[in-house]
Image (cartoon, rainbow, N blue to C red; front, side, top):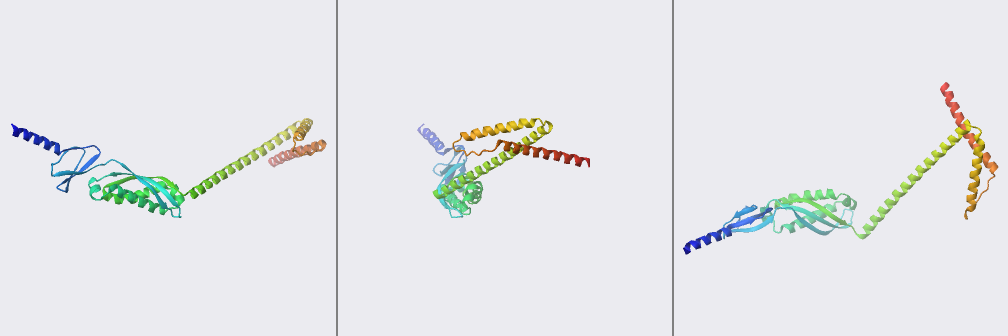
Length: 282
């Protein structure tokens, strides 16, 4: 009876020792007597105790590698501090274990070197404005190398590019000057549009007055009265100001002046219509 119990216990121990559970998203490498034997997939796997040994278990999911801030120099000689993040995953777990000793350290060093080389080929303005292009350029240079390590670089994001304080101040001043320039241009355009509208309004008013005087001559006296009234009101406003310089004009002369202006407007419009009618008759 005792030998049977011993055999059963031995079988149970062998089963427990040979059964290996690999979680979903992971893979493992098995060596037999010190040499690579096979790869274990997710789920329940069995190995030979004492002969087989699991030397590595790692995830095949996407991983994040934070590249510490690096001091780099641009093509135009500006020193920058650059911070980036690399997203990567293992595509061949056997290569990732046997082809490279310290995978994450190798990825960090390779990415840092490539990042410096790419930025050194661009000016400061190009570096700030073409981050997406630089990301693709870096990926194109990294993946041919990391493929030999069984790794795929999925994407690289340059999170922050920090120029020196003097350069930042110059950039802020340039941006402020550009904003002020645009504001002045907008203000000048608004004043131009307002002047055009005012001139069009004055022209329309003169045309209306000329038409009324031409069709109703008796309204000339009313117009003289309105001009004199506006003159009196303007004089009162000027006299009420402490800083105003008042220049008095003879109302009689001012009325004659307005009469001449109106007469010229009416004559100009009548000549225009007469000329139009004559051309039509010809």
